[in-house]
Image 1 (cartoon, rainbow, N blue to C red):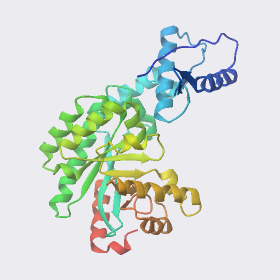
Image 2: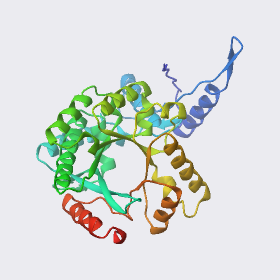
Image 3: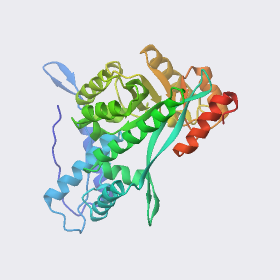
Length: 353
């Protein structure tokens, strides 16, 4: 499907000039052309890497460029720039991989849960599992610092299994109280490309005693589009296990409607960038309304993320959203704090805040 080529710009061009050249290349590559009377067009991504005084050879530069392209695809950018902070092969990142591996072994990672509330009942119906790292000397390591490291190393699978195991055990504890809660776990692009994920999920769900439908696996729209064929294949096999699937960050990616209707999902999670301004921005409100209508027409439930005010929640109820999630409902919290919030939700749903 895809073809790669490398363009070398001789020095001294300067990084600003490199960006200009990359923009010009994008424009030229996107110009339509005719083949046998058919008008065709190309889509493309560019990974931009500048030669710095760090001794990098041609192989290293190509690897960096490939990483920049992957960043562009994952973030819906035409041009992705290499950054050493994202380079898993840099000495700093390699050290962090080692520490993260140790953190898994020594149980420094923990899982927090952010409540998901049903607008039909005003009750908490489940929680999204979010991994956190309390480093012994650095304190809390930001997720956006260690999760990308895990995603580009062999730490990802054991970390995913850890989160799944913890989340399923917590879900079973909730269900033992008779409340019938569900739990959600995020899968990354690399998880979708790992053929072992099907057996991993089947094994852990079976061992936990949790009904498969009580587990929701969340997959970002951009992850599903990175390798659409493989993503759909894996999602079909996961759905065959009985687990539920959610398309996360909907609206922030670039999935076509033709592809979207083929996905065996149960939920669409409307991206928080639209939800956070629905009170003040008519365009965001229109996008959210259209997303809700589309999802319902396709048979999906709708989860609105990033709900920060009572007014936003009321508006989402009016627009027809099914579930809401965000700081107005509850921030990510420990399992013990979640249990308290859950008990309060069941006792007095109207007063949950």
